[in-house]
Figure 1 (cartoon, rainbow, N blue to C red):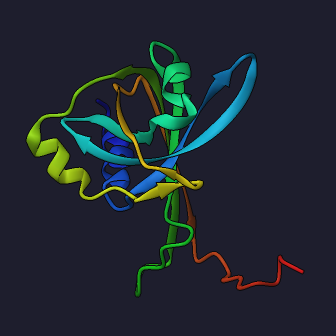
Figure 2: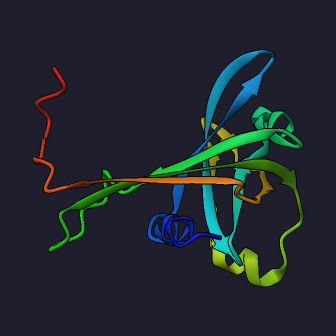
Length: 141
């Protein structure tokens, strides 16, 4: 992997959640997923109840995460990472399950039913904002 790609994948390790994007029935959708990075692969844990994993399995997906809502004292850099690759359903090893940690109890009122996806990134991008002005709630009415 090129150095820039490795840096982007390393940034993913700093936040626990992101969004996976693909299409389902010819319409685009985003789904929240917990991720970990293992040997350059992005491993996802999603809720199985909405069948988003079925749309992702075997398809090219985009996965993105950022630190926009996770301020780090002394670090003014905001970043966003997106990786694209084919997603596959898999069974994580015990060590990988430990890295994921405990899952949520409920997702949109349903009991959480985990399903695991693996993405081998083919394309990776990272964008940074340095010294971006802080906005609190001016954008909401």
